[in-house]
Image (cartoon, rainbow, N blue to C red):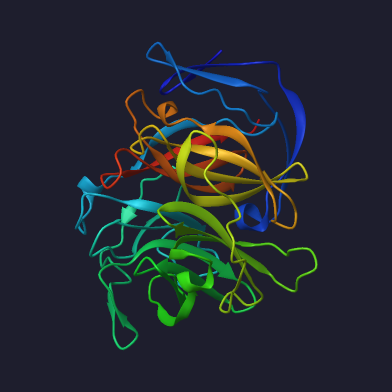
Length: 352
């Protein structure tokens, strides 16, 4: 039996599995390790939803709150969300080994930066946040900007940072140091998708779709008649994007909204990890998992990947997953707590 922060979890005997972690995580390293096949969380005498995921996927243990709005100099909304964590080895004069981009949800928002030498922290707030504001003359003036997503583009030798503002536009800025950015362009708009009025909370991954001449895919949230779905777009250069107009993933049974999908290739299969709001009460949100085919045309819901109560017995939401590997650990950053009043949390899966 292993002790977890929010209670106990019991595992069946493990088995050897091969894991391929993509370039985004740790230079394409290949690992072999043992993990329990099935986990059941027991929290405060109430069983959290049992993950219904393939054997061998990592099981995370809550580590800490790594970013609390109460400790921040720039804190317009008592809220921090959408962690995007990168290594800084390619950046000019990095402040630390890792950068964490984040933002408040509501106006005025603002894309912010924290840095650290260890993924566990301590994370230090950049002194001049926000690094991207809601007004960037002559390019735009909006009510807020939020939803940062940072990826290193080797062909450009630049960091691309995607963010939205307003909710119907995803924008792109670039940087050589990860701190000072130049505006690039509008990357995606809601008009590129059928019946959607939003195009926000993008995640971007290096992946070539079969039969297409692309290097990148974007998973983003759209809003079709009040229902948030996950949509797909692809690009060769990270600047100009071609959309698939219909949703890739819709809310699974028992949920009402989905957002913030993360692409996780594992043991030769493709998975999406995302948060979904419960249909009975949208206050509650947990991380779910779906399998997707290599062409990103069909998805199959597998169940709950990480129940919100695995963080703490009274936690109402766990959202916006961001994974990064380091050594024999896989790190999961999320925002937790009540929507519009959240903090950034870290959970870790050990890889013996």
